[in-house]
Length: 223
Image 1 (cartoon, rainbow, N blue to C red):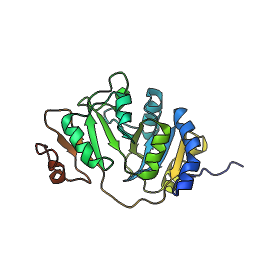
Image 2: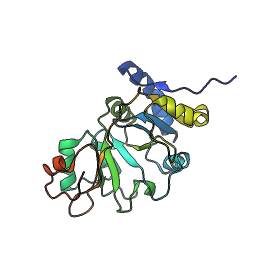
Image 3: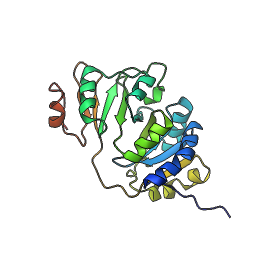
Image 4: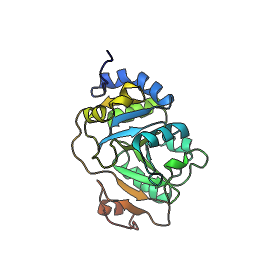
């Protein structure tokens, strides 16, 4: 009899450390990870073409909706060839790590096309989730991120929901689920497009436009 698919404990510091080796191997093999963030549970992979395509298939993601990247250090931007514009640099200095996603230029020949939005930029956030940040640092590179849910369903706030919905993928080893407990309801990250002459809010979220304008007064849009 096959064992029921289960999530990997990812709550206490000891659990996080114990999970790292298997999680890093899983990502390096191009497989998909489910993990807690500062907002909801996410799905992600390494930022490699084949891994990203496997996530597109699992998530049933429309071609026009790219994934964002999660980082745990500015050095990860440099390795991907992404550039902080002057406005993005000021916003990052104040709000990273935090619930702010910045759409940045660069990444030519390093970032898969599926991660590039219609404006040509790549969305990036430095996650403030301590356990997730520890895992990303141990992995040594950015990972992709999208909400852990099927189209039409709300994003998961527990690992149990993911195992229930994606049990066959977990059982096959395609999907590894990190259980960081139940997440409290929260606003999504604010997304700011830094590709143009003036930074522009393209998704309202946890950080309001009024607060962002304290750093970049010429910000366009409201949150």
